[in-house]
Image 1 (cartoon, rainbow, N blue to C red):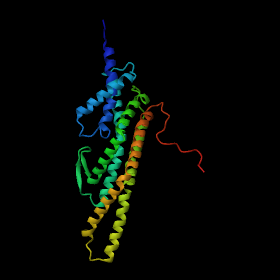
Image 2: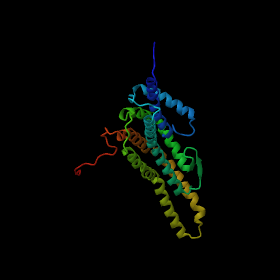
Image 3: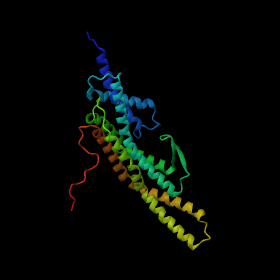
Image 4: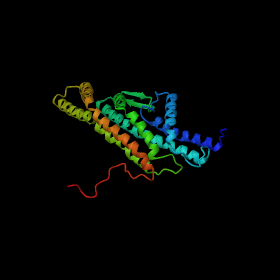
Length: 277
């Protein structure tokens, strides 16, 4: 006769609950998975399926009751880890949207804003267009599957433990957030440079012929030049987007190691001790 004690039941519940919490945290914050268009039932079902696959390989935490205060702290810690890993990839898409915002303001489309259901705010038309392009590129290179494999790998680099994580990972996440502005400016440089030359040409034209209405001809010209530059730069967007996805996935892979005290792999490359000739 098989007999089960309450300790065995709690161990089974904890073995599934804690990996599920980390997985659901990533699914809630990661791009594509965390989109509001994806039903909540689909997210929970995918999380439970992944947890059932991962749970047998996750070592159990000895002496931890999921209904105790220590179990609750582990639950919150796992949720933070999953949210941070998903937010790491979300920063990549925020950089692309930042490039669209800069391009829209330069083109004069700053007033053409739409409600973004994903961020519960307003974003420009160019920003949403570039976000859709980034989403299709994200799917075409199977980056969503690689992100899930990185999540499964994180249970080996940072196992479920009652030991609190250190604050180094949050510092690295804040530093990674600065990538939004740098990458956004770099992606929008072709539009900004082309429209800068266009505005200089319009200024010279207005100076040579003051009777021309600058506001009447300036907006259609800048708008047309901006759309033309976007159309010409689309074939060349694949390489920087793939580089962004690789950097985001690598940062998400190394972030659990930063939280672990046993980690020795740095997020940023070390500078050489001697100058390179």
